[in-house]
Length: 465
Image 1 (spheres, rainbow, N blue to C red):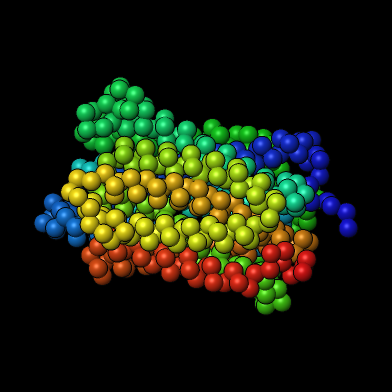
Image 2: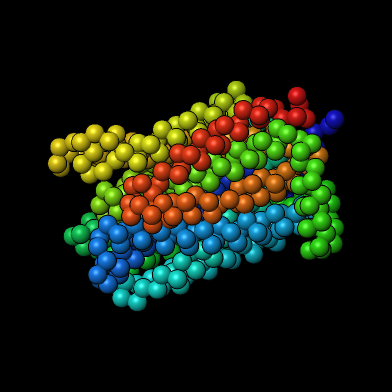
């Protein structure tokens, strides 16, 4: 059968430009994960919320656990909304062949949500409002990612998709590193009132009102708006895709039909179940890593930012390398290896306190706990990035080549159907135990469950078996 999945020209745009435009989405959107979710805004929310709770007389450790729980419950609500809407919208987009209008819509939500987090000053801190704005931006980012990922099969021959996916993820990590460096060098003040570049925060941002930290929202929004330009210029909906009339009801009908037929492809079904759990666990690692460092190890925002740079550089390097490994051995061995690494890393993190490593006591003031957390960050950046890159390539092997957009819709469904589970479990365990450290233990179980289900996944899927 002729390969028509990657025409040399689409709308007068060369395949090379199309690939680079697709890469630029990763570059543009990564700061929401790097700066907002993990290393700057997430820890800022936790610290500010905990300070308010302590002002009301709640003990420090309980306040920190409650702040982590609030963050978790906020992400749980957002995840449920994504889970409900993702499969319906994905099916509608698949039936119409039109993804770009949806990407534009969710890009607007990304921008509005990121900008809205500016209104989170400590003196007028409203957790519900802050979480609402953050959730709007996160919904925008997640849905835009669903639709842009579905372009991957059209970016080249199947044996090159692992390399292309890995290179795109690496490019996105580099974007996250650059954005984080800019934030730390030009805006985020340390205890001495100056940034890492030794200057006062730009634009007269007052550290006393945390404006130097809150600027991360508007900065992330502007970054996204600027660097999405190449994507919108060079990526097009394929002209040969079916163009059906937009019908909400038909989208739901087609989704139900697709779900009923899933048992006929047991390898795909097992893969969707596996990735559902390990991707959820990975999101939990990203979401709570910075908050954990701030609450358990007492790190400052700048220290967490440096940690983030280290993790992101590790991710960029290993995503690029793993793209070639994926091309050589296939995505399944890569995914299995990364899941094992992430399980061990989660156990390492749980074992760390300022006075213990691997549950063994260390001398007071020892640098070893911090050093081990840096090691955990390197492992999370490397294995986490590679896991995501190889996972989206694995889907191209599991899905029906004639209905690949539908397969990516199912991938989005499996990825979002339980996005609330990890935050909810972390929030619940944090509440029950009153401990941030023990709160992240569910992640080990989720990674293990994902790894177990991979046993039934065929490396090249049912269609190639």
